[in-house]
Length: 126
Image (spheres, one colour):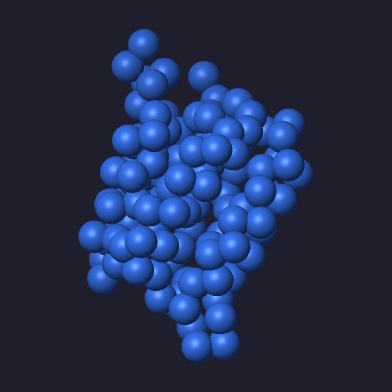
């Protein structure tokens, strides 16, 4: 059974201030725009690729982004994998936990291959 996947790069929705800090409101707006554009992709899994992102995010920023994600629905109603470098894995895990606490299926990964295996696990076990 094929798995449908939409890759969203952090640069597509994460916005920063001139100082390199997260601009939360602008980022939430950009994320909402992505969801509205990808409304037809509701049955797709989403891979958020944050490996090239240089924006500094606090724990509070991550919590608010997870909250925004949970209110958007749409493309994020299926599985969402957060792909990140090892040095930011703790932050990605925290973001995933915040999203999971809001009923979303979000998981953090260090490798693209592990994320893909997680996506296909549902039908591979059937």
